[in-house]
Length: 160
Ligand SMILES: [Cu+2]
Image (cartoon, rainbow, N blue to C red):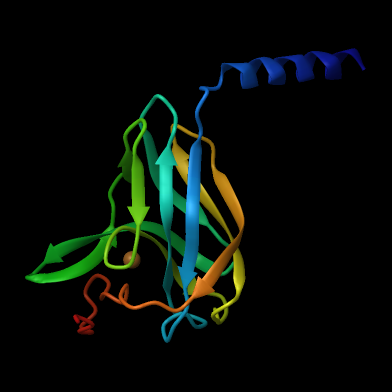
């Protein structure tokens, strides 16, 4: 009994050391469409706000519907806009926000384990360096224009 009390006390002490602000995620959603089927891919979007007083890096995540999750950016590769993994993650300076949106940065979900239909709700964990992970339990799937850029060496031309 005594040991448990000591452990609790140290947990409370650690919590007391956390910075006043936290990382927050708002307007999160996941895209449904032709590619969001079993074995396919899709992306999670939203706004990540770093309310802490230090730099935080968005490094990845986890969700039951995807075998592989990566933080992606859009880049000009061989004269075409393509998406690629952000080496080292997406840095969010103290007090600033990062917007994940179709045609821009996004949390890529690959190797989908099932079909994702509009209206479906999924749970997504966002992982950070410099802050605790955040899990959102009701990220809604909805259709959207854009965000179908080709990935790595694929030859698909999805340009609008
Ligand atoms: Cu991507």
